[in-house]
Length: 200
Image (cartoon, rainbow, N blue to C red):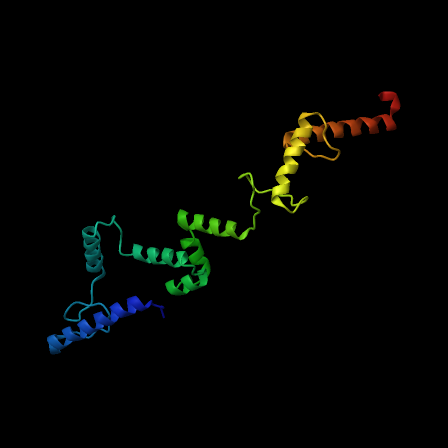
């Protein structure tokens, strides 16, 4: 069983009404096949005829060259875009397993992947920066955003005057890296002198 939206069900009901009228007009010449889509006399539609008619309609509508079977892929893409899970899509396609569905149809469109990335990023809370730059990772210090701007300006003035407060850490990663390297070199030399003072 395939779940259909109300709009599609309404169109199918109208088609059934027209088909019943055609059956009455043809009378005994009507061919009963049990098919939903038939010729006016009730006979079955040949797949090649249906494909050719679809190609003509697509061309008249100004669509790019597509096959009738491509509508199946289009329906799956729209289902994924609407938030349907793989199990539901697999059932709709009557696949033997969800693995077949995943291996065939999980190549989403770039805009769908972009929307998923934006939705994921929107979940992560972020602090608003007063300077318009990236939000600060550390939340230590004053809880008033206005005070934080004054503290930074004061720290900059003290650094320019050569008075760096104790414990102040630089945010320049290159300076951190070089400082750490000098510290490791000093500690290594100190250990070597303590173990083998005659080699130093």
